[in-house]
Amino acid sequence: MKISVVTPVHNAEKFVEKAVTSALDQPEVSEMILVEDGSSDGSLDLCKILEKNYPKVHLYMHEQNSNKGAGASRNLGIRHANCEFIAFLDADDFFLENRFQKTVETFQKYPSADGVYECIGTHFYSESGKKNYLETMSWAAKEGRNILLTTVDEYISPENLFETLLVGNSGWFSGDGLTVRRSLFEKCGYFDTSLQLSQDTEMWYRMVHFGKLYPGEIKEPVAKRGVHDTNRSIIKKDLYHHRVFYWKKMMKNAVELNLGKRCTRIIILRSLDHYNHRIQKTFGIRRKVLKLLYLAFILIKNPVLIIKFLM
Image (cartoon, rainbow, N blue to C red; front, side, top):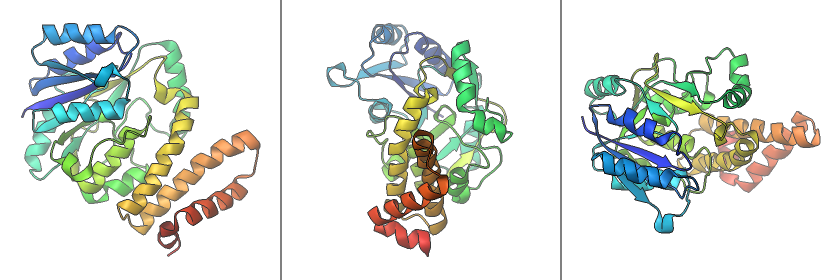
């Protein structure tokens, strides 16, 4: 099995070498594609050194070395990938030993599989980063979840995976634990470059909708997410702001992907919870009033959703 690992790099000078070496230690990895995304630190110079020192490392940049975001960077990396299988690794994360052992076994077990998702763990690079992460994930901790692991914690058939991920009761998977056939992108398209955050989560939903994804190692981590002071996904002001665009995209998907009534209702209600929390926190308006007002607004703006939501 030959795998191309795609890694967007933006201001990750402190971490990217660890990511690269952790990938190159895996015998299944044939190439490591770094896409330098207009960093303002020394990431570009370090990536050039890594490309020079390791024959499997290939470095790409956007035109004029501009910053276009993680989605556009992953898209560029995918288009330059040469292997049948593609895995993702963020520049501040790293693979663990035998990262793809269960991946290979799962693709052999399910020859029609378009992808395999697996468990990832958490590595704290700083105490302040740890504090921010624990605060951001406190809601999951209150539900009794192990917030140090990101995984779908039970076997879910590919046909039921989309709805299971929407509900969230069985957990989620992350890009560091995902390996897909490159042919899957012909079915589901590429990353949405209009989303600055959560463009990966939105893509995983499209992959699950169009393809067949199976669980590999879901109990023990095969990779670790690096948590530090500058993770945008744990900075609340960034997270809440960009989630607005994410839920708008998900509602658009409900129409374009012709999702069933139940999935459409879940998407609308989940978006309601997000908006209600933010507006109530700012203006102190009662949640029930907000839900009615917002529900009326999105159904009027998206008339196709009226039938799916009310029927």
